[in-house]
Image 1 (tube, rainbow, N blue to C red):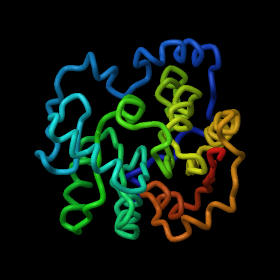
Image 2: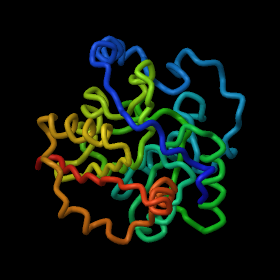
Image 3: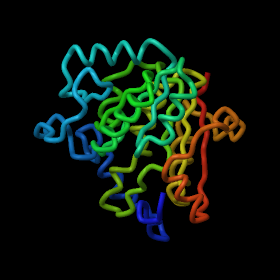
Length: 249
């Protein structure tokens, strides 16, 4: 990991509340999804690993492949990472917990392709991935109360006010996370952007289904490998903050 791979970003993180509310009013039209609403998007040009490799696109994979995916998602305790980057954390985590199943979302198709190849070379069979936007897939893919842990680690803050709708942590998406988590399930989040860290805590703790951040839950993840962004922050001495929110039982 070198400083060329990541940028620190501007000093100030801002929220344009009026513009954000205008965007949220169109959230269910696909406003803010990476690449736009996939129902209106031309067919992807970039190929994922061929089926039956454990990579999918919800609107393009075959019915047989999606049936395999559904069996995978429902047959073991499930953890999901959103924004996996090169997969440094999630692949290591899947190796450490072979009796659990893991699903990674990363919108950069090359990273998904490489993650799947790494998983296959390392013999990791409890892992699937997609380059879809998780905000579109999750409510269409999973049943309520079906996820044990969500990991959303160092999400892109989308600095510019016009890009606010792309920020993951918004009330509509926290509604989805709360719906899909099992009672007692954990939302594990992190950010090295102080202003965005404040937004994360406010929007999650403002949801009726989530308890306040509980640092004692960190012990459960004490042996987790760092993400590539976390490793970059450690290298340059940049502080960051982890959050652990639990769904009410």
